[in-house]
Image 1 (spheres, rainbow, N blue to C red):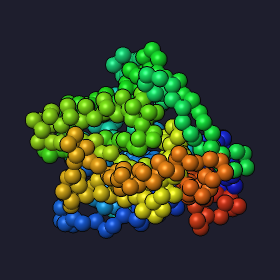
Image 2: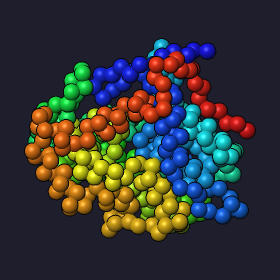
Image 3: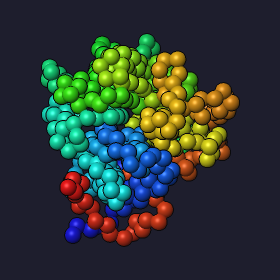
Length: 403
């Protein structure tokens, strides 16, 4: 037994350890939030692959797919095992998800490794062939990474968060060592050299296309196969650093990849490729983007409980993918799960608060209590019902297939 008390030490929005019991409870809460499946029990469960299954929208896609669509298949993520420090939060979330899937009688396997590598693509392909009948019905792609090594060339690319054309100044939300909020202004210099190309190589659609091509080369795509990459557009308030910046260039490449894949899949397997534009949420990736923390806190201040959490959005996505609901796409072929966020009335209200926000009035304009809880819960802290003064087992094993 390696039980110990796990404390919530952090550097800004980055926590040094994760709490296993808190992560487990949050996964269970997400599962319980998913409506009962709407499917004929006599139908064979669809086979799905979720790449990036342990965090954020990828985790929501995995849980919603299991609890709502009854999928079987594989989840892929890249997490650190417990050692001197605890395991990463995604490590514990994966273990909890696997346990719930097993209790529900769903055959879902989790692999831990570099999704960009061809070796992991081979491992997934082998599992699909030997364990799941050799045909894949759905692929959900949700990868946010700082760097990617191209398996063909061996070149490693690094993504950057920079505006394009000129420097970007924005308000941002920070908290001091005692948790007191402060509104400051930060400036980010513009993209230089090959920053755009590097970011596109990491965060664009190249690896997604390689996954589809690899699986097709092994004859693993079912007739009617559907694949979707999860994306974000966001508010005009953050567009300069996000949608119009280097990450935005990568998202544009992702959307072009979807159109190219869609044409190819339609010919080959009567299939479909899409991007899903999700709404704002507090994630480990989003908190690193200048201005996003302030924007999301203000958005919550405007919408309160009308904000749509990731698990609800991904349940809607699975309903559309599986035909429970009609597939609803915009004129660019994107599934829009962010319409609740981007209505003119909501954006006008958030913009008004953004323009007037100061350190003195920010507690009245943004839901900072909600925001700080959301950040802490990314690592399993601030979860109701968990005794953080009690020792907890940290040496949780990676889930292994039960049969």
